[in-house]
Image (tube, rainbow, N blue to C red; front, top):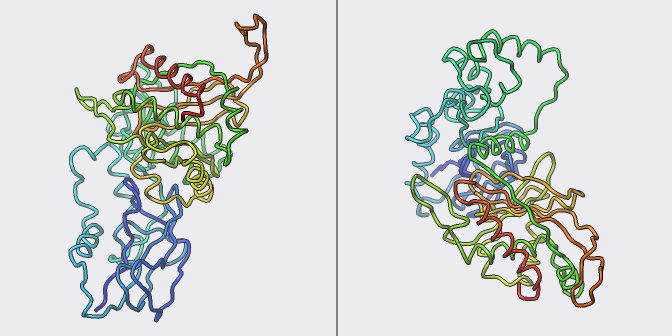
Length: 414
């Protein structure tokens, strides 16, 4: 019996992946869940595994070619006596065949036409379409930012070029009320042809897409200084040594567990509380940022998080994060921008979150010691909290920062 090896759904908003390595040959015997292909999405390098044991009889995939989810990448000959998960195979095949059907309510937006166009077949084999590599993420409404009004004619032209309203931010409109006309747009595009350009990497486009979606909400940032003397002393005496970011992750998790609504999401007239305290942290990679997630941080002592944290940092730098470390995303993110010498910043929360906590660069500052009635130097850094202002006000954000700073003064309890 021949069964297909299909391009799996590699992430919630991943529509396709590019084959980077083929690890098997025709005639090779494989086991269940054996890695046979290495593929790359916009954020990670992942593996495609065999659904059943058998022998490879055909390989359709080609290196450096991008394939939609559900595409047949090869065929496997299996023993007729082995039970096959037929519904799953049918479902995967249908997902590819039905890719042009109307999306369910809530998933359609003004860019849906360009989304369909980029996945059109460029191969002579309709059962195994090849597509030009693209990065999409979740849809971004054209009216989310940039031009306040876009005519149907201009919208069609933008979709033709796979652009959204944020790309029109640099155009000075000459139409009524400052409206950007088609003539303004064409003039702008013509002028771009005279400029020096470079292709944006898939990672950079994915980050841009995420930030556009984040900016559809009212965001605010507050900050407060925190003394790091106790933290640094505890770290010096610890083995293994937690990084400063990990102390902040643990303090944030404990603070959020005490009042889960702070990390909730507003949907309609309901605040949805998180079911677990899963915290992400930013890791710089080539031309972008990945956010590994540690699950149930409030329930794991600091010393037991060190090894897991280090492993996730290493995996992120190689762009090989396990799926369970990124999907679903955490309820908040911690970013240590102080590692770049930045003292204060206003980071933007991920679209799926309403909180991002930042740690600034530690500096030596004078501190008044009430016991000795004298000034003494201490290491101090600024904590910043960027948040969805629909969920939190300044007072609530300030109390959360105060609680985090208080927890950091007793690192032995983290």
